Every structure is written in C-alpha cells, then in structure tokens.
Length: 167
Ligand code: HEM
Image 1 (tube, protein in one colour):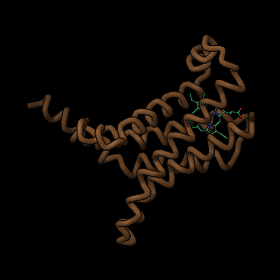
Image 2: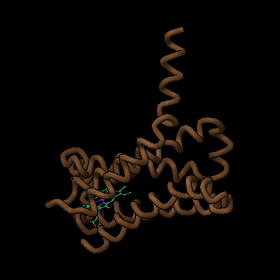
Image 3: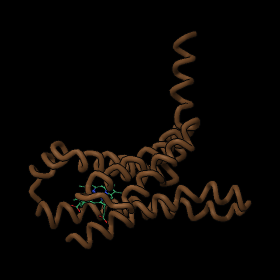
Image 4: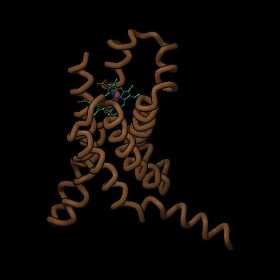
C-alpha cells in the first residue's frame, strides 16, 4: 500500500509540475508544438491523483465511508490533499471540448486554479512526512515559486473586482 501511495502521489505531482513547465518552455524555445502535450500531462496528473485517493480508500480505509469523511476533516494534511484533488477533478472534467465551449472566458479563470492545486499538493507532501525530507522541501519551494511567478495573472480578477467596487 505504501509503495502504491508513494508511486501515485509522486507521479501526480511530477506530471502536474511538468504540465506547468510546458508554457514557459515553449515560449523560451519558441517551440509551439510542445503546447499539444500540456493537456495530456494535466489529464494524466489528475488521473494519478484520483488513483492515489483510490489506493487510500481501498487499502487504508477499506471502504469505511464514515472514516473517509472524518479523515478529511480531522487530519490537516488530508484536508489539504483533498482540496488539491477537488480542484484537479474540476479541471479534468472541464478539460473536454464541450466544457470549454460552454465555459467560454470562465474556462481560463477556472484553469488558473491549477497553481493553487499544485501549491496545496506540495504542502500536502511536506505535511505528510514524519521527518525533514529534502525532497518534500524542494517540491514545496517549487510550488510556492510557481504561485509567485503567476501572481499577477492570479490576482487580476480580484484586482478588477476591487476597482469595480470602488467606482
Ligand atoms: C483526498 C486526497 C488525498 C489523500 C486522502 C491523500 C493521502 C495520502 C497519504 C495517506 C499519503 C501517505 C502519507 C504517509 O506516508 O504516511 C500521501 C502522500 C503523498 N501524497 Fe497524497 N493524498 C491526497 C491527495 C494528493 C494529491 C492531489 C497529490 C498530488 C497532486 C498528492 C501527493 C502526495 C505525495 C507526493 C505524497 C508523498 C509520497 C511519498 O512520500 O513519496 N496527494 N497522500
């Protein structure tokens, strides 16, 4: 069980990080074809994260549904992981073409939440370990860096709302 949890957890985090490096890489190297694999990596990241949750339900909780709710509420690192998984699931469902055409401008706004999902997943990893592990600290630093680098993009809707309310 521990191997499956680690494999799917690290797999989800690596795929998520990889998918987020595609845009800057394609811009720097002017290699636009790279964008095509961004969605595939994101979809696989969500599938790995859902499998990770599945392993937890099947092997650790053995389908004890009441336990699942109490674990999510009582254990902060599980709460944070659940929030990340919730966002990734929303992004997965909305990644289909029909959802894109329905959501229109809101689609991009929704997909900006991926940075929050990444930061929460990194925090979940750091919080889940019992002793200090350099690997978890590096992932956490990468999650925070990704959020900081995109802060203007992420805070734009909030700033627009504040300006609108002032008028
Ligand atoms: C409800 C959602 C989630 C649950 C219940 C959950 C549960 C767990 C558990 C029980 C562990 C093992 C902790 C230990 O070793 O004692 C773990 C580790 C981990 N989880 Fe999650 N997790 C969730 C969501 C996520 C998500 C969304 C990601 C990534 C996108 C993620 C990434 C990781 C990573 C990277 C580890 C550490 C693996 C390692 O030690 O090698 N988890 N999680």
